[in-house]
Length: 144
Ligand SMILES: [Zn+2]
Image (cartoon, rainbow, N blue to C red):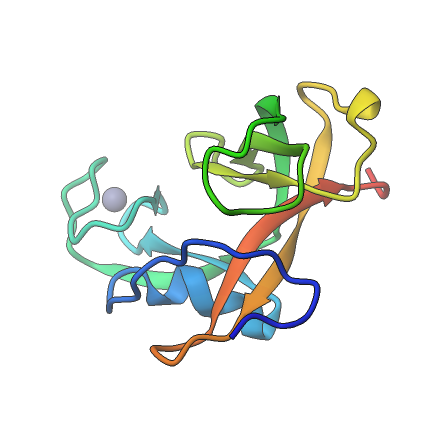
C-alpha cells in the first residue's frame, strides 16, 4: 500500500541490473552503473560499456545534481498518477549529460520552470512487497 500522500505510481519491476538505481534512495543516493575501465556511466543498465566494451561495471553514487533539458506540464489524466497538473521533465545528470532521466519536477511553481535550470534529486518512497522503490524526482537546486 502507498503511504498517505504518496501518489499512485506504476512501479518498475526490480531485477539485479536495475535494483541499485531504484533503491538507492533508501540511502539518499542516486546510483548508476559505471564503467571501471573508462568512467562512463551506463544508463539504462546494460552488461557492457557502450564506450569501450568493458564488462567491468560497478554501481556508484553521483551527486544527485542535474540540469533541466526539457519539460512539459501535464494537465491530462492519461493514467493514474500524481495530482494534476504535474511536470514531466527530462533531466541530465551533471556528471555526464548523456545520462538522461524522464522524471517529475516537483516543488517548483510552473512559471519558474526554465530549461537549463539546476536541479537536485529528491526521492519518493513507495512500499512494495517485492522490494521498496525510491523514485528519483527533481526539485530546484537553490544552492547553485
Ligand atoms: Zn567503458
